[in-house]
Amino acid sequence: MASAERSRASHGSSPSSAVAYNLELFGGRFHGDPWFALAWGGFPLLTGYFAVAGRIRLEAVLAAVFATLSSHAQRLLSTPVRTVRRRTASVSGTIVYRDGREEPLDAESLMRVPEAALKALAAAVVCLAVALVVLHAS
Image (cartoon, rainbow, N blue to C red; front, side):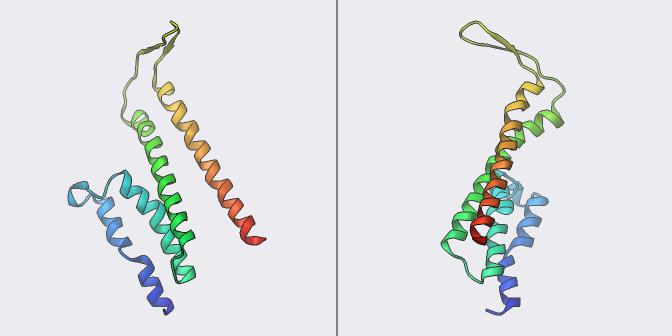
C-alpha cells in the first residue's frame, strides 16, 4: 500500500467523528463516554500504528483496547469531579458510619478519591509507556 493510501486509510472517519462528537450531532449520540474512549483512546492508537506499520496486528488491537479502557476510566473518574468543580454551588451533609463515626461531606471530600485515582492512573500509563520503550530498545 502506498504511503498516501495508507495515510488516507489510517485516518478513516476521524474528521467526521470529531465533528459529530464536538457539535453533538445526531442528538448527541456521539457525545458520550464510550465514544470519548474510542475517539481519544483506541482509534488514535490504531491509526498511528497503521500509519507506521502498514497493517494491524493483534498487539495493536490489544493496545487499543487498553487505550480505550484507560480513557473510559479517566472519563468515569473525571466527570463527577468536573461537575462538582464547575456546576455545584455547595455540598453539605454528613456520612454516618455504622460504628457511630461521622465525617463531614463537602465538595473536597467528593473530589479527593477520584482525583487521587486519576493521578495513579496517569502514573500507571506513563510507567507502562516507559516499560514498552525499554522493552523495544532491548
